[in-house]
Image (cartoon, rainbow, N blue to C red; front, side, top):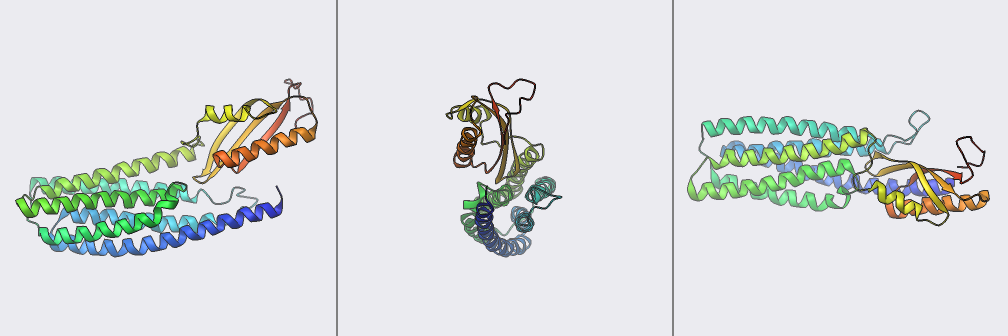
Length: 308
């Protein structure tokens, strides 16, 4: 791969990262405003559901802030000491987000249980107005983040925070309507349990994916057997072994493998290498592949025909 090509890829990724940062800044600003509105509204209306939703929004603020920090750090270039760069900063940020949300959900469960034991009156109209405002704001944030949530773990963690909060806001709106028409204040802590469950579910999903990356697991969206079969179907490749697929970050996949080919010239082998790497890049979005060629004459004793 030429230096010009490396610079082209680096420039493209830098541009994509800048776009992510701009959208995250917008999302962070909107979320801070909604958090302030819901926290004030929660205290004024005495609604635990609104306070829980505001707590979830506080988690969103942390998630978005850490995501911005991780995106910024990941832009630092690779060095002789850190040859893959700083891409895994996003994984550490995602873990912090996930753990924080688990503690937050436990706090909400405890507070909701206390409200069930001792229900308190709530100003349902104020609760409803604030919840609708939060729902609208979350919709704007989700719209801005949805394009990057699929490819970036840390953005996806932040996206799930906001999506969970949007679902929680729907629950708070429904709860406000029920309280307004029935006067049943028990709905408030029940909705709070619902919010806590959403937070906990999202946190566990993020932590599971982050752990898979740290354990060098294969990306969940890639079928190991199918990828192996796809490579072996390429003309000139007889078999594939020592195939490893892992993740540096959610958008930076790495692969290494040994390819067995027929006894042929180095030029022909290099042509196969180019075909395989191009295939991996286009179909599986694996931009970093280390492949070793072995001809069919090779045995356990190195015959000297392997090339990189």
